[in-house]
Length: 236
Image (cartoon, rainbow, N blue to C red):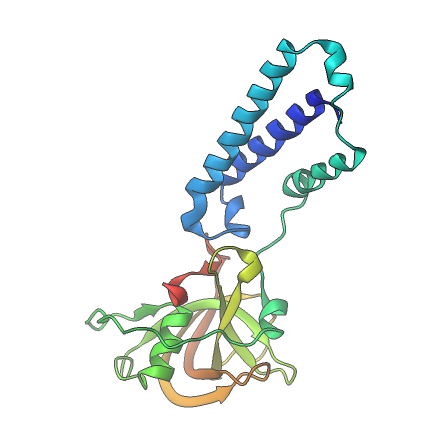
């Protein structure tokens, strides 16, 4: 790999990161708050490519022959091609079914909005309040919760969101078990908006024995995959 090839590779990788950062593509890899760093990384790589090209034009042609990198350097093209050609979906039911719930006790529970309108909660917020606050603020409230479906080995349905600390590599699920008016046929990875109520019933995750609360389902309707499929509320 000569310096010209290095320049092209740096520019291509930088442009790919800028594209990911200016669209929703980056959300498949890192949490939403890291968007500025993705854009900065792309800009730095493009600037480095420009500097490398400028330096190459100022260097005698025969000098480049003595500074070729080993052929293994071409492996650096693989992550670039992966970003360009392969856009993997967000982690879903398979990962959730094989990973234990990551629910942990929060530091506290902020006050919830009052009123008669259905209360919209994140999966992790409901699960945390149901397990560690005994559902005190959830009783007698109509709730709306959105997540994707996963099934355990016995076919029991869960509503799940994957939470991130940093990136998709450390994603972990938080799960809610479903009871009540559950649709008779559920396909894994289907996104549902569940309307229901709190129930004190609980179970244990078959993977790690972690606590999982139930939700009494009133209605369930399919919804599109959200703009950001990951949930960051459980670790904030």
